[in-house]
Amino acid sequence: MNAEFIKPFIASFINVLLTMAQTELKPGEALEKVDSKACGDVSGLIGMIGDDIKGSLSITFEESLALDIMHKMLGEKPTSVDDDVQDMVGEVVNMVCGGAKSTLAETSQEFGMATPIVVFGKNHTINHQVDGAKLVMPFTSEAGKAYLEICFNK
Amino acid sequence: MNAEFIKPFIASFINVLLTMAQTELKPGEALEKVDSKACGDVSGLIGMIGDDIKGSLSITFEESLALDIMHKMLGEKPTSVDDDVQDMVGEVVNMVCGGAKSTLAETSQEFGMATPIVVFGKNHTINHQVDGAKLVMPFTSEAGKAYLEICFNK
Image 1 (cartoon, rainbow over the protein chains, first blue to last red):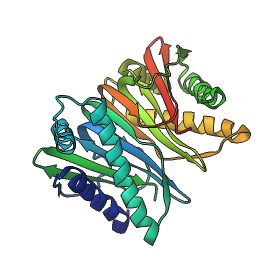
Image 2 (cartoon, rainbow over the protein chains, first blue to last red):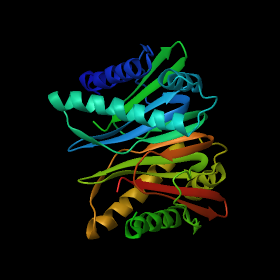
Image 3 (cartoon, chains in turn red, purple):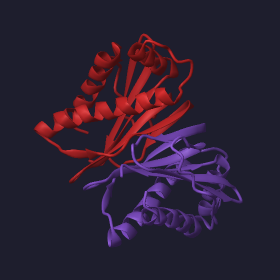
């Protein structure tokens, strides 16, 4: 997968968490292995479709990080991943994808975004089903880990 | 959400499991409550985008049912939800969505499909983030339960 196509998603994720929740993410080393999977407690997922491309994006958070983001956004720290936290995760993935979409529309590729889906369950794995390239990007922060996973069919 | 828009997804799901895995699904009572969530062990999810519509579909299986479907398709019963079972779940959701897409394209609505995503984790929940209508349809079979969840932004 073209690095120029991935960078806007990574930049958008870092930017969204910094501006919305004063949370600094440190990118780790990208994994491009076919059998690599994101693993965490709460994930936001979104499908993408363009004229000649389709794919999917997921962002998976450890519970501690998701709760900390809510704390920083709202001032009160929830004790569990309730509906409000899940809505926040859906909104984050929507904003990350929307940010990357705007950047990519200027230079190379236009695509539409489906509605986000949020998955909650301790230590679930996310497995994007695509024949094309796939990237899992781990991030660390003071409050926990997150994984951005993205794939396209070309 | 228009019933005529939902029926092809339900019919396609029943048809795919019957023809691929000789598994008879009995539809339960549809839940249209906003806070209802599918819950299970392995889910296939897919985003959908049309000219003036977007949404998402998920099918969530209890582990016992997912393993039984693999058994009926391949002859050998896996002992856990391994990568092959997850690929099967992704393929099933792709076929269900593709079947409904063909039916709907004839009559009312055309849409494109993103690539499927498979989630694995004991008792995870699926929460479609959409302002529009949402439907959770439970199914029972001899080997376990499944939930088809579908939503669109109109």
